[in-house]
Image (cartoon, rainbow, N blue to C red):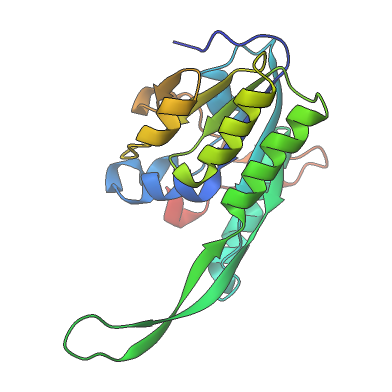
Length: 208
């Protein structure tokens, strides 16, 4: 069941949050080759769907992952999905087990900030009449509250990925829906995606 949107609708996709909701369950790995515009159309009538924004970051320390990710972004661009890039930041942590040794890892940065900024900026510029968030990240609650308070005529709807409670987001958004496997099944990209110049983009083997 879709949302009762009005006018031009922008969909804001938290790529990190959505990706990990699929990665956490082996049954859903085959849905990583996902057409985000088709997924949006599961919740927004096509005549209202305007812009789909994909917020993500490259794992620059892993060339193979980065190459797969760039490949996917090219496939999305062919389906009118715009990408907004953040970044990962190196981070040193201490093992909480007996060893107590320090180790290096990476923490995803900027995606939630980028979503919040885009949600607010586009509201102020009048670039949407309704907004749909695909995320379970409650860090963007203040931005949603700001839109609701300053633009009461612009509803903000929420689509929750798998295993994301997002209770605070549900509280501040106009309505919410959940992603089910039926939505993923109808939202896969073609394999291959054929670009206008005839080039073919195939789903990475690890995603099948």
